[in-house]
Amino acid sequence: MDIDAVKNALIQELDAVRAAGELEALRAKYLGRKGVLADLTGSIPSLPPEQRGAFGKRVNELKASMAALFDEKQRALGIAPAGRAAEMPDMGMPGIAQDVGRLHVLTQTINEICDIFVRMGFLIVDGLEVETEYNNFTGLNIPLEHPSREAFDTFYLKDLDAAALGRPASDGKLLLRSQTSSVQISVMKERKPPLAVVAPGRVYRPDAVDASHSFMFHQIEGFLVDKDVKFSDLKGTLEFFAKAVFGQDIRMRFRPHFFPFTEPSAEIDISCIICKGKGCSVCGKKGWLEILGSGMIHPNVFTNVGYDPKKYTGFAFGMGVERIAMLKYGINDIRLFYENDLRFLRQF
Image 1 (cartoon, rainbow, N blue to C red):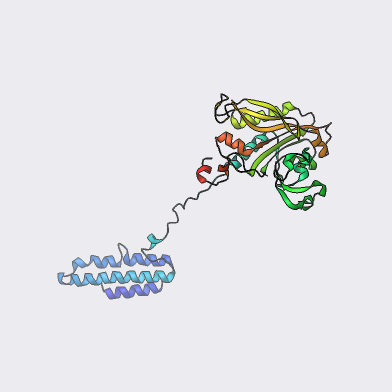
Image 2: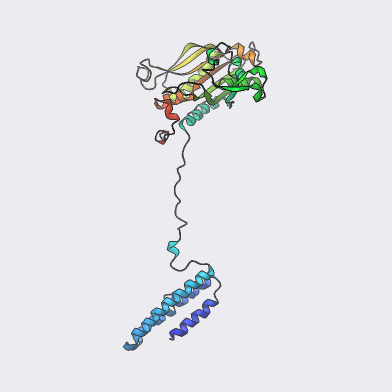
């Protein structure tokens, strides 16, 4: 077989190739296991011994030339050259895993608490973080002389009053709300009973930061208004909540207290979840842990929002989200929530 004739024939056939499939068929014809090159190689043993070396050398040169011609044609057709497939990325391989992240432990706690009250028929309402003096204090029966209204206990916004929010000037100055109880006033002014609402959100107080205090923290306010609402309704609601969060084995107690916006008022304690009420360092050897404040909504609050206090009654409660999370998970420093230390946050 004439080697030069084989090369010339390949060149002519390559000129006529227009598609990848045609090129691969031609490659099989010349370089395949039963192709032209294989026939040339197979004919070497039948040659006289003195011709075999020279012929074999020419066959190898033809093989290299054929490979170069095929690569050149592949490039012309925009196809990766033979032998380059291994250099291409394997599109079937799994991608690089991404760190998805998770909800912050405080967000998890807020969601858990709100879900409990939603199951009892409460509606979740968001309130404004920039509030008026009326909604934050006056409407809640907190008098002008109350210490919490002083500038050292509240973040007032300089030179801004209620008119900046489109409210009457009589609503007073603007401030960063110091309690989510302000949502009681804004909701009750807009809606009529029956109402059952929980309002989570951030609140602000100029407290010195330490292991148990922060200038910004989270509260959840809850209130229910209807005809013939009794203190026993408050007790049953809070007992259901406390046992859903801390377990069915806890005990509860209501201690008399004073809040301007409720009468009667009570603080709620649960038996220590660490020592089961026996007394330990977490509960100060008392066996009880305070979790929230509550009471029956004061008649003056109803009057301030236009409700008839002779027709309606209701209860309200408020809790610090950080405190609930600290008690539930055994966290001893509130600053851990805000430092963004992933070693801490990834535990929840």
